[in-house]
Length: 122
Image (cartoon, rainbow, N blue to C red; front, side, top):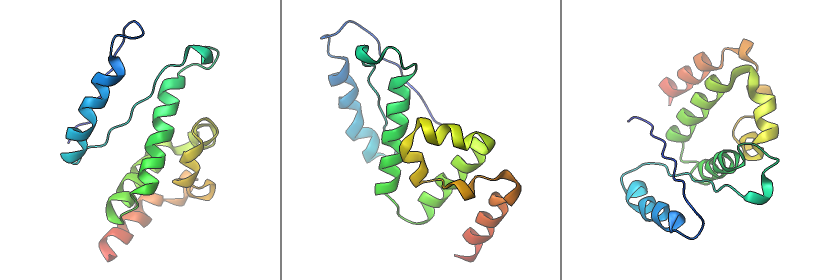
C-alpha cells in the first residue's frame, strides 16, 4: 500500500496527542505501521526533533517485530533508500544502526541483488 503522512498542529492542551493515539490501534490492526513524534519546545535548537524521534521509534518497532521476510524487505528498502547517507543518518537516528550496520551500507556491494537472491532461496 501507499505510505501516508499526517501532521497535526495546534495549541498545547487541545487534544492533539489524544486524537493521534486514537488512530494508532485501528491502523495497526489493519497491518499498518504507526509512528509518531512530538515537538518538544525545549529542543528548539534541534531541527526536526519530532521527525527524528518518530523515525528512531519506528526503527525500534521494526527491531521488535523481526519476523523474517517482512523485516528483511523493509531492511533492504531502507538500505537502498539511504545509500551513501547512512553514516549521517545513523548518527541522527541511533536505532537505525540496529537495522543497517556500517558494512551493509556500501553501495558498491550490490546489496539489492544479494537480498533478492536470499528472498528467492528462502
